[in-house]
Image 1 (cartoon, rainbow, N blue to C red):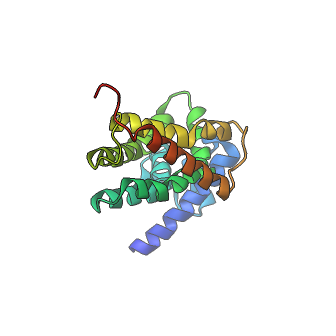
Image 2 (cartoon, rainbow, N blue to C red; image 1 turned 90 degrees about the vertical axis):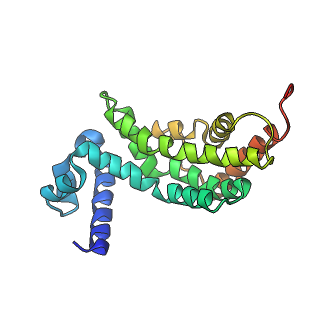
Length: 204
């Protein structure tokens, strides 16, 4: 199959899988149901993803691909940490509170085996957070930040950015955020983090 044809086919499969996930939950997102909804063969799904867990992992990986690619490019280009997070913060918050991330999180939360949660963590936070931490380390190396360590700075920033918003979205306790609020919250999170770690820690 030509690359462009496969990419288009994969997007159709992803759309069908998300539709089933949102309508029926993880239990209703069987490989056969996805194949039928996407008008694909069951054999194709098993060949491409291995099993349902593999499909779920591919969904999560694909959902965060744009963020991961931009972070990787910023690290390679040695871009300004502040400018990079200023541009990426709203995109990351929109992604994490958007319908696809929320659908994945709901499925993972309802999986008693923990397998979906482990897959989501592996290709989500475990992939993205180290790159944000690397940006924070660069800020320390450049003396743009002078207090704390990169891990703590990263945790502070992500905590201020997301808070409990995704959890509230998962339990249907919060609506999607409008674009203006996403931008405002991302700005507040970044500026608060920078102010907190802009000075030397006492005793250092």
